[in-house]
Length: 381
Image 1 (cartoon, rainbow, N blue to C red):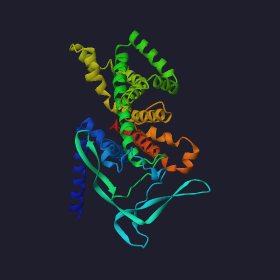
Image 2: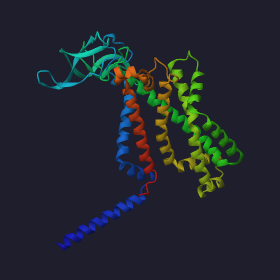
Image 3: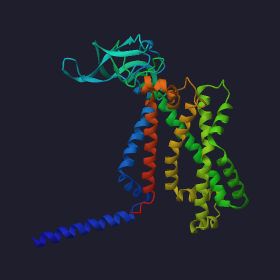
Image 4: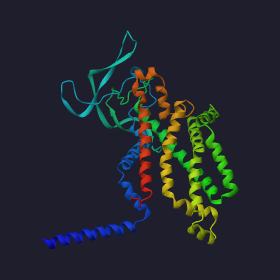
């Protein structure tokens, strides 16, 4: 018995030694990933973000109806309920819907929708529908789900023109999510470049750069957004407006990152590895790009993850105020324009569903940023 206990203790000690050796011999990337995996909230948020971006990339595949088609007979229809049990109490393995029928209340002149139990339509997967180009390249007409004709299915209900809110929300994710990504890439480039030059060279260059940053930061953002958006030509297409709004958001969001990069470079520019690079006749720009910026890459990754939700909220706010993305382009902010007054919300509260997507996206990016921030210092317990 004592021999077995001794062998067990020796095995545990050996396993602990192997773990410690693997821990201290691991690369920075392996240490960050090991600690990030233990952050369950951040891992869950990463899954949610991947799912949302997959919706945006393959938006047409996930839609059920044409997002621009007007179903006049179903204007302001409530969300359809999927059912597994019919009126007779019979269970169905394949979910189904009852077709909605519209009735006009003669006292309030409001449209009321009730289920027509005589018309039942089963949900089908991988059905043929409106043709589209998958990833903008492959011609196909296969959609994830749909109901058998002549039924129509509105998971999120419809707007005042009878357009499917679910399909419009999925299509709107493409602009709302991509504008955050593109804006962050542009602001990241300018922030690292200008902040790196300011912090590395210092002196007059640093002084002038910091005064410019302070001037930009001191300008109220919403009036500046409104002025820049109003300056866009009215005849521009949706694509041109999209690119212009992305550029506007990027130009206004780089100063905080530039300040952070400047502070890091002021701290590291006299380090031994930088002096060694200078002695080896390496150029200043090459030192910044190849040595200084990668030395705090984990910090920059955290900044990017926390900047994306700010971009998404800015686009949503601009489109909600009708000074950003303009119809017929669809974004979450454009969809929320229909929920601007109390009357619309009291009659059609489902118009706020795109706002729920904004909240989930922003929270997921914030949780992801928190996880990356904790994992950025893998040696900290």
